[in-house]
Amino acid sequence: MAPETLQAPTAETPRNEHSHSRRFANWQEHHGWSAAASLRRLASRPLGSLLTIAVMGLALALPLAFYLLLGNVQKLGQALGQSQAVSVFLQPGQTAQQAQLLARQLGDRPEVAAVTVKTPQQGMDELAKMQGFSGALQTLDNNPLPYVLQLQPRDGLDAAAVERLVSDVRELHSVDLVQDSGSWRQRLDALLGVGNRIVLVLAALLALAALLVVGNTVRVDIASRSEEIGVLLLVGASSAFVRRPYLYAGIWYGLFSGTLAALLAVLIEFALAGPVAQLSQAYDGKLQVGGLPLWLLLAVPLAAAALGWLGARLVSAWQLRKAV
Image (tube, rainbow, N blue to C red; front, side, top):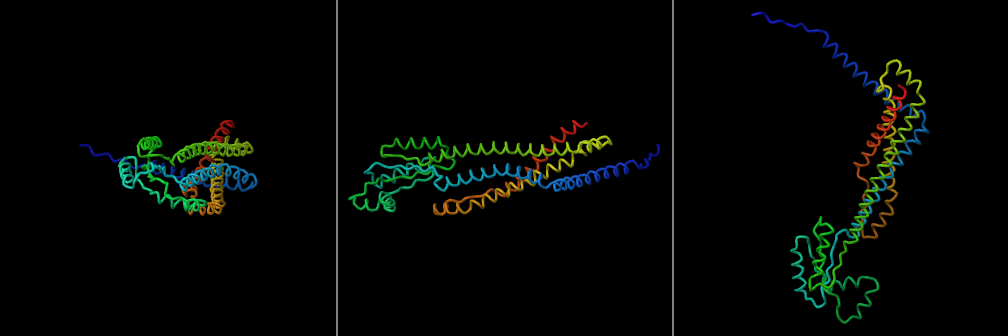
């Protein structure tokens, strides 16, 4: 049997590993230099940089303000009565036993979550608490109010199912009148749906505007340094090497403008805190106004930085393609 051939280790593998690690170190070093250099360049022209950041920040703050407004309008609707309660007025002359029996029948329906019976005396007491009614009620010989059933539809029931429920209840022979207090809520929900769609469209348009602002700023910067960029390309610098500082400039613009937008949104919340507290007090504290969630405030600067990078990436690639 022939002896096994032993292969001597070569110096090629360690040399390749050293070369890769050296290139990676150079890549990291250039990224750090590009980030610092682009930040210094923004600081060297403070007025222009602040104007660009202010324009982008205001553009990004507008969707946040509208989102905050819509969210609190929805909470106002909840405070005024989000539940689609259905009031069922029985015919005069119905007894307490008949009202309880009908309440049990309606409560057995799958689309009904709860039924509350309001007696004529309870209705009279509520009227007596209202301004201007107490004197008139004292002149009545008997109580003319009927029994009233308050139906609470099951959570998650759509508008069509509530309408069917109301229609079925109206057909009952002992029912005189049915009032669906949730109809106004359905209209409010429809308006809020339109408002949410408008906020999404507005956010997309203003995000595009921010992207164009960054792109135009980077384009002007590249145009002012076209000779320097031409020399770098002639000596063999890659396009990625040349455009890297401009990409970091776009990231800085987006990050600072997103932070400004988040701060403006917080300031809007503080500005509305006083009037909203008075409004909540007028509704016995039922109106709980909420602010923007923390995750959204933290996500805005990151999303704006991504927009800035994208705008700088598109414009720098186009400008460098022209230079080549």
